[in-house]
Length: 86
Image 1 (cartoon, rainbow, N blue to C red):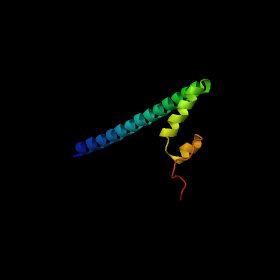
Image 2: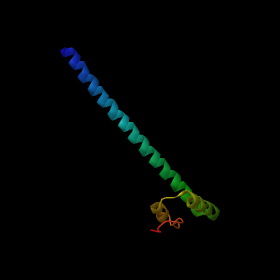
Image 3: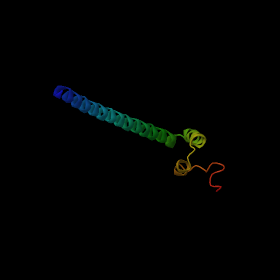
Image 4: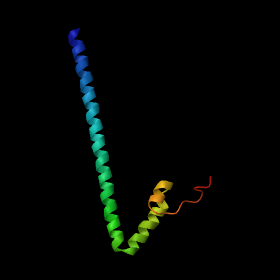
């Protein structure tokens, strides 16, 4: 009976370790994704600063795709129709 209890405790510890490792892997993946997005953003802004046509296309794309009011404000985009009509 004692051996069974010890094995169950070991299984529980291993399950906890597995969960912690999965959490760490997920955290590292999110950090990598965020860093990748930042680097792409830096590259896009750098290109846009050098070429007004790229800047205009980027601005038009953002205007079409960014929907959240706070994000639009941060990017200097006009509010969408119907926003702020409370």
